[in-house]
Image (cartoon, rainbow, N blue to C red; front, side, top):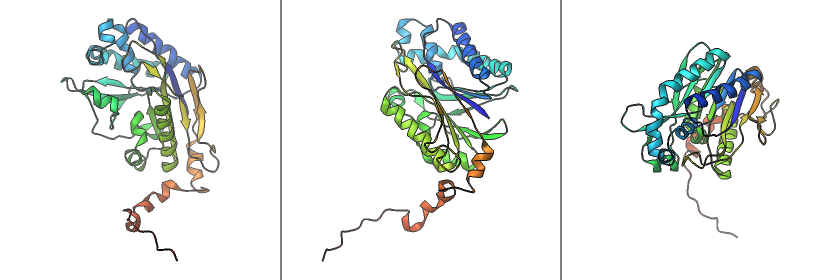
Length: 298
């Protein structure tokens, strides 16, 4: 499977049509590069906040209310592009008022070339999302078939938590998709380390997309940091640093060819087997750390 992950330059579209043209251009580039799966970043929908006046643009709550009018058009757009380009698309995330009561889920939609659609909500909220006061976590964890392989989505902060991702991998996922958005080098490092750790623990590929550039008109997309990348376990026959591909500079897409047969074969000649040895950390003798005392020296 050839995967493309975006280092997506945030802009300021004047209307939905301009936003749609940009998505078509970006995804066409991914398809031209041979991608079967293209991954866009977290908070992609907030770019649509630019289509409203300055008062709405600069107010997160107001922009969340305003962009709801685009939700159906969003679904139609990415569904159409997936079909026309014969491409699986993970369209970043849309802050969606799923019950119409002013409480938003950070929802990542995936679209298939055959017209299929599914979604995964972000489960763990960052400090920024908690402070917003109107964003709530999801309550379901999913895996799904993607071009004959099992996959799961872990949105940004979620990739930093081992247990939910482990549950996805125990349900068969060998590809983890991580749309992300970070505004500091520390944040970008945390997500990158989370991706590497989940790849190592689960013997899985991880595909991370990021936001890039500045959008000072937006309280959520103001500054964006990091590189898009595709990760693998650090083991025999796989990259020693876990990096299959990464963007650099102004590069829009990083492409990687995922060999799931080689991933499975690496299990047999593994230098280490974190995925198989996972249960060992739950042994009764080490399940809880014990307080101990220094031995008296003689």
